Image (cartoon, rainbow, N blue to C red; front, side, top):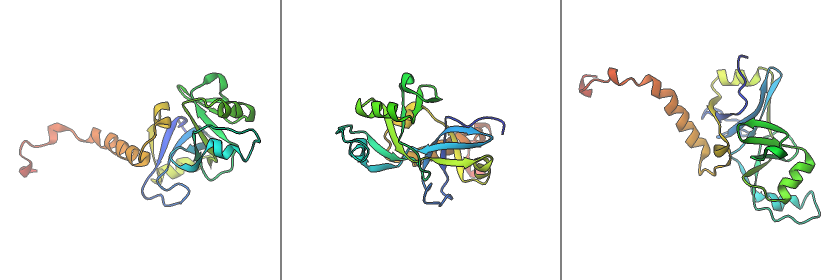
Length: 184
C-alpha cells in the first residue's frame, strides 16, 4: 500500500450488488496495512437521534438530527462533526470523528451542528479494500466536510457522475476532435 485513503469517499459502482453497499457512499476514516474502516454517509434511517436516544437514556432529547445507517458492522454511536475540541480523531481538514460515550452524549444533548450521527460502520481486513477497488467494486474521490454534511437528493448518483467526468476529462483532448464531426 503506497498511500492512505483516509478522508476519501468510496462510491459503490453499479456492479456492486451486495445489499449492504448497493448505491452507497462511504467515508473512509481509517486506512492502513492492517485494514480500513468507514461509514456509509448516504443512508438516513427513518428516525432522528432524539427518537433513538430514548433507547439509551431516560433523559428526553429533542435533537432533530437524522440518524444514519453507517454500515453492517456493529459499532457504538458515531458522530462526524466540525468541533476539534470534542474529537477522538481527525478524518480530514475540518472534519472529526467521535465515538467516546460521554462526548457523543454531549454532542447529542447540545444539538451541535453541523453533525452526522451514525450507527454501524464498514470494515475491511488488510488488503481487502485494495482488492475490491482493483476488481472495480468502488470508485474513489476526495471528500470534504461540506460533502459529508450536505443533504443530497441522491449523493451516490451525484458522486458517481462527478467521478466519471473527472476520469473522462483528461482523455478528451480538443486537438483530436475534428472540426467536422462527419469525418470522425
